[in-house]
Amino acid sequence: MRVAIFDTHQFDRESLVRANSTSGHDLVFLEVRLNLSTYTLAAGCQAVCVFVNDTVDAGVLRALAQLGVRLVALRCAGFNNVDLAAAQQCGIAVVRVPEYSPHAIAEHAVALLLALDRKLIRATARVRDGNFSLDGLVGFDLFGKTVGVLGTGKIGATFARIMRGFGCRVLGWDLHHNPELERDHVLVYQSLNEVLESSDILSLHIPLNSDTRHIVGAEAISRMKPGVVLINTGRGALIDTPALVEALKSGKVGAAGLDVYEEEEGVFFVDHSGEVLADEQLAWLLMCPNVLVTSHQAFLTKEALEKISSTTLDSITSIESQISGLAEKSIADQRVLLVGLG
Image (cartoon, rainbow, N blue to C red; front, top):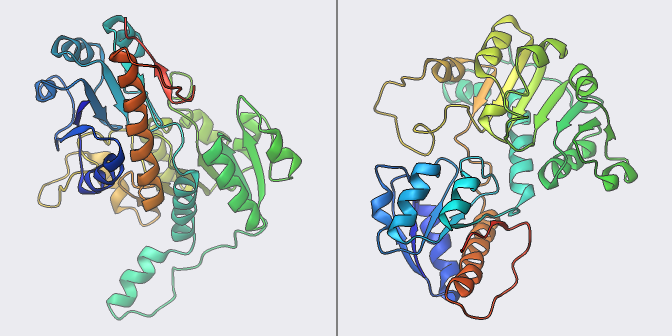
C-alpha cells in the first residue's frame, strides 16, 4: 500500500523504515502537516499516516476520499483530532496505536516532577556560570507526599506505581477503576474533588474529550492545596491555560511541568529559535522559574518509537487485506477505531 506520512521527523523516518523492512509498503515521507492546504500531497496514496497535530476533520476527510484514500493511520493513541463520524460517511477506516510504551510517558512525568522539585534547570544554569550558591534551590522530599493521578489506564497506572515506590500516598480518579491497583495497594480511588483537595502533586493521564476539556480550570484549581505541583503529559487542553497562569501568579499552583500545551499546534515540533514567539501565554510560562515545558516529547524513546512504527504498519497491512478483498487478518479491537470500507 502507498502511504503518505505527514508531519514526519527524522526519528519517524528512521523507525518506520526499519519496521517497513518486513511490511513492504511504499512510504512517502512528508514534513508538512495534513490539512486542507496540504492534502493533495496524498494523491496516488491509499492511506495517510498522521500524528497528534495533523488536521483530520470532515473537510479534510472528504477531500482525501475524493483522492482515493481509504485509511487514516494514527501513529499515536489519542484521536481527538479525527472526525470519526465523517470518516464513516466517507468510507475511510481509522486505526491508531492504543499502547506503545506507558513507561516512556510515565517516566517523563516523573522526570518533570523531579526537575521541578529539585530545581535542576536553575541549578545547572548557575553552575555553568560558575555560581555554586545554593540559595533558592530548596526542594522537598517526595516521600510521604500525596500524589493524585487523574486517569489510571496503562500510563497512569505505571506512574502511580513509580510514585508508590518513592513512598508517596497515591490517590486515583477514573471513571473505570483498576482493581489491580487497589489489590496491590498502589493507590486508593476517591472522587475527583477529594483527589483535587488532598493532593500535593497532581498528574494528568486522561484522554481529551468534551467531558475532560479544561478539567483543570479555575474551579478545580480553587479546590487544590496551596502550592500544588501540576504535571501534564496527556493533552494540553486538559488544563485551562489562562486559569493556570493566574494560579501560578498567585502562588496557588507552586509549579507546573507541561509536556503538552493547549495551543501547541503550529509551535511544537518546529524550530522557532529565530522568531519572536507570538503566543504570549506560552512565552510567559517559559519565563517562569517554576514552570518546565517540554515539546510533547514524553513518547520519544527508542522502545516507544519501535512499537508505534510496528503497530502502525501492521494495522495498515491488516486493513489493506480487507480493502483488496483478500483474506481478512485479525486486528486487536483497541487498535481499530473505525472500519468504514463501504
